[in-house]
Amino acid sequence: MSSLPLSHSFRISEQDLQCELQIAKRWIETKSNRPNSLLGVLHSLESMKEVFPSLYKLLQIGVTIPVSSAQCERAFSSLKIIKSWLRTSMTDVRLADLTTLGVMKDRAKRLDLSLIVDSFARGHQNRKIILL
Image 1 (cartoon, rainbow, N blue to C red):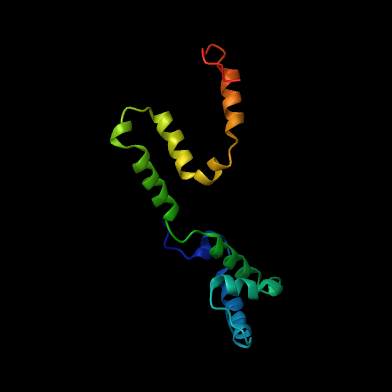
Image 2 (spheres, helix red, strand yellow):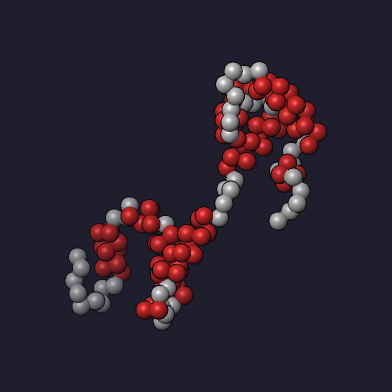
């Protein structure tokens, strides 16, 4: 990971940003209800985004970049549960598919299983079990 400031990564002028920060700091200090989070500062500057374009852009980026690896940790926890000692002989394709279903369980719960079964039955006409 780079040790350069975030502004360099997104091609935001550091000089412009420093000037905007000084003015924005004074402007926020005059407000009666000062924001206490990055998202609060972003909402405060919403009406002034034309005045502080570099700062506003950087705040938007800062709010949208994930701050932890919780998603990755959940994926590895799911993988640990899925690939138990009972399932050591499954193929990589099946493991990847089950892991995707485990990690994206919110989306998986919204799937219409009858459509999936119908699609499977149409694609496998040589089955002895009639699914349709």
